[in-house]
Amino acid sequence: MHRTGELFGQYKTLDQQKETATLGMWIFLVTEILFFGGVFLTYIINRHQFPTAFGIGGNMLDLNLGFFNTVVLIASSFTMAMSVWSAQTSKKTLVTLSLIATLVLGTVFLGIKVVEYKQKFDHHLIPGHSFDITYCSKNPSACGISGKALDDEVKEIKEGIETEGGVTALNAHAQLYFSLYFGMTGLHALHMIVGAGLLLWLILESRKGRFDANYNTPVENIGLYWHFVDIVWIFLFPLLYLINRHLA
Image (cartoon, rainbow, N blue to C red; front, side):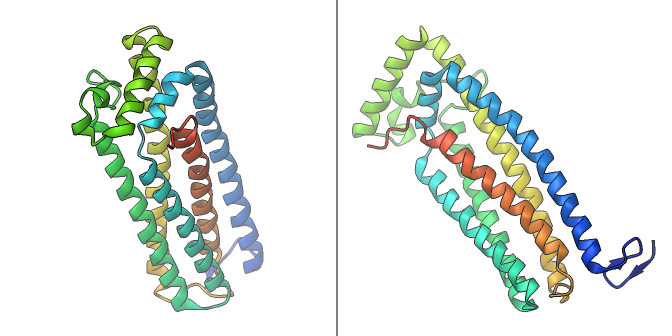
């Protein structure tokens, strides 16, 4: 395929090439919306069907870690936007620095998710044979809860058992919540990992001074992808962490 600088042979101008690439990215993002939409719909239907078990499951997530991760992703959206602006204005050094900051923030997010996942493993909240929604209420020291938080959890578990018709039913419905939790956050994390790989490529290319006011299509399109992944989390956070949350 013929190529002149950054212009591929099937295009007449860089503007035409950019419009085509941007359209392709938006089409891809629409398919991603449809994909995530099915997952969100599954969650909403099951949450409506088993509100008590899902509420208990949500209260067992670490709100502080979830909130911190939300702040981290919002910050990464800002640094990603800065990298796009820097490329559009030919501030080549700032492009690289902004991309590195975005990658660091994305890595921090993934690291925190690993910590959260380990918590769920330690607290017997991984769906499967060893799953036990009552584990923390029976072993508070192992879960690091005490005082009012422990009293609230014991009360909530007791009410959940009564509402769901027994501990077996509560366990089954809570497992459904955590299956969706791991499925949704895991899928989001996979997109973050893909995004991190794309950011690494952008950083390597930006260090060569490739992106400027004349050519910045990859930065803009990967920026669109990164913002989309951030927006998905903005929906995941309240759905998984905040509904029926005991904040007091």
